[in-house]
Length: 199
Image (cartoon, rainbow, N blue to C red; front, side, top):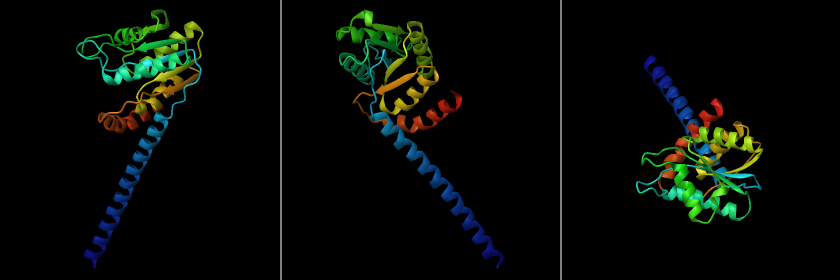
């Protein structure tokens, strides 16, 4: 009898753990779904500036396809007169190039006047970009920004910029997808949670 009761107890414990784990998986997947929907739903509004977050620069000094896609999205928003200026924000990447400089050169080559581009070479991560952009905007008396980044990065980027003090933050994402987005999306759930708690 004792053996039977112990067996029942073990089964109940396993069911409890299974339900707990299933609940955690469900919440995680739901969070990923919310990030996807939010990220692909552009909300760009008439603003003072477009902020493009940096990303990988290739060894030959050209933007990676991912970064070029972000820049193209910003270029499109600029040409639609959604904002008259663009902040390019990045740091020194593994290739040794200044991401902001490479981004600016790319936009100038597409026809955007140099005077319309503002360089932030200390945007080493999302938080730094938000902080630096907010300072630039404060100095210029600007209050509205459009951020351009990958879809999975949109919610955290918007959160960081709002917490940095920018009053209106709308978003655009490039129509560029790759296999590594799945990993990035999976990672973004704890990354967003961390930002939400710390910021």
